[in-house]
Structure formats: C-alpha cells, structure tokens
Image 1 (spheres, rainbow, N blue to C red):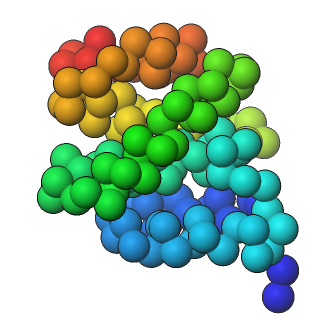
Image 2 (cartoon, rainbow, N blue to C red):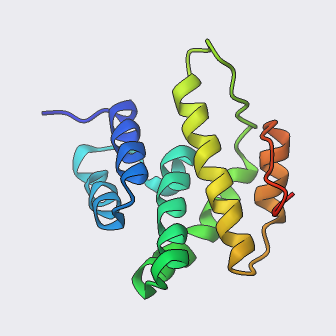
Length: 138
C-alpha cells in the first residue's frame, strides 16, 4: 500500500496530537521507505516532528527528544526562511495543512521560549503568517 505525502502529513498530525513521541518518530522513520520527501525538506512534516520533540523535552526532559530536536532545529530554521507564510484561511484548499502548521509553529515557539532558546525566527514567521501569538511569547 502506498503512502502519499498528504496522507503521511495527516497521520503525522494525528500522532502529534496523541502526544506519543515514539509513534511520531516511528512514522518519520518510514518516510524514506515510502519514497516521501525528507522531513528536512517538508516544512509541515518537519514542524510537526520538531514540535513533538520539543514538547516531550518540556514534559519529561527526554534526552533522545532533545537530541532529535537539536538536530532538526538548524535545518528547520533554514527551511522556514525559504517557506512563504501560511495564513489560515477557512475554505481554502489547504485549510487543514495550514491549521496544522499553525498549531505546530505556536507549539515550537512556546517550547523554545520555555527552554530559554532564541525564538525570534519562529516568532517572525508566525507573525508574517498572521498567527495570534500568546502573550508569553509575543
């Protein structure tokens, strides 16, 4: 059975919301097997995995999650610099994906702020996308 990128993104988002990092990482590891683009080249997939890892670090202090997040952050920052803003418009053909991106980006922003990391690049991209920033990160 084939796994398309849209289906993989939906599954990744569902697993991300389920808060089981091991399931998110397992799905990410399957991307090459299904000839899907590398996570580091797909903004939404990379955001979802990064968000899940940073959230796990905040919750449990997991060292493996920290290593994965640290590995992803630099390529994700570069990828985001080449990614146009993704405002969430109801009724647009990419509404769900833009909503998932918003959720992941706000989670990444919150996690970076909580962990005391530089988050200006995430904050700027979120503002350009028109996301309402929580008061603790705005």
